[in-house]
Length: 119
Image 1: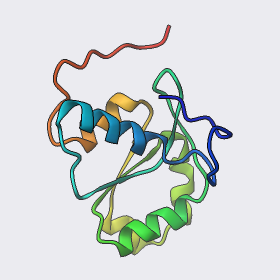
Image 2: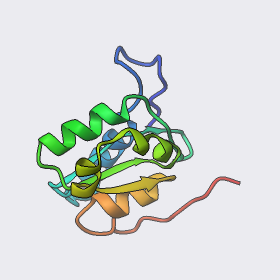
Image 3: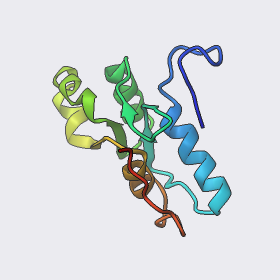
Image 4: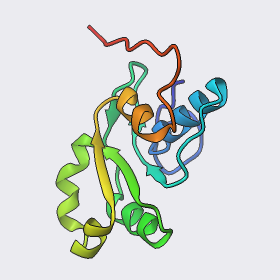
């Protein structure tokens, strides 16, 4: 799946890892955990890229009762802007690759999935 910034009208490519996770879930029959939220752009090789608006997204997840949030590893520095009570209530996982996302977001390890890394 390729979701470049200009492919469809939207306010940035931050839903890339969520759309990829939904597609894998649909194709494998492996449900996405209900308590997980995620944000991040994805490259054609599965790398998770940083996004904007992390503070607003984490605050919304917190208000919505989400417990686990997956964020791009490169956005870790943005966590300094998040109120301490929100950080304490959320289990935040910085991720670098889509394989990490799938392991954390799906209820079971995707069957038959082979990890292919870029050279």
